[in-house]
Amino acid sequence: MEIFQNFPLWASLFAIGFAQFVKVPLNFIATRKIEWSLLTSTGGMPSSHSAAVTSLSTAIALEFGLDSSVFAIAAVFGIIVMFDATGVRRHAGYHATVINQLVTDFNKLLSEVKTWPKKEENEKRKELKELLGHQPIEVFFGALLGIILTLALHAIVH
Image 1 (cartoon, rainbow, N blue to C red):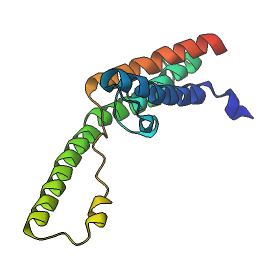
Image 2 (spheres, rainbow, N blue to C red):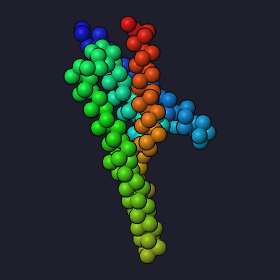
Image 3 (tube, helix red, strand yellow):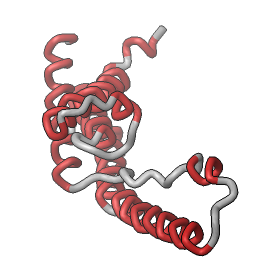
Image 4 (tube, rainbow, N blue to C red):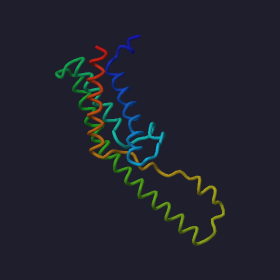
């Protein structure tokens, strides 16, 4: 099957997995807590989105050259993804933080006004995910990770 020969695809998927995995030990260094949920979470250091798109662009550059149309598509796609990660998604995370605080404050107000008859339901509510986007440094290191991993994989595989 030809899909198993697709180096750009596998390099990108490996970059995503590696970036997600490395979030766990990096977070442990910072907080002294192991949080396995980081394996599937968005946001954080390094950006797996950036690692994926730079890995894809790097692998395509190695396979087809920097002057290929395919590389141009991958590079522009990567720029858009990284811009979005530091812009729209990051600000959506800030908005989620404010909304979660508003919900907490509103619920506190309600409990002070009257007894909350269904406390269990209130505790079961899900908060909006606040860690959506990336700081520019997270995107930079995700991009760097994607490039380095792809160059290393290309040297090993080819």
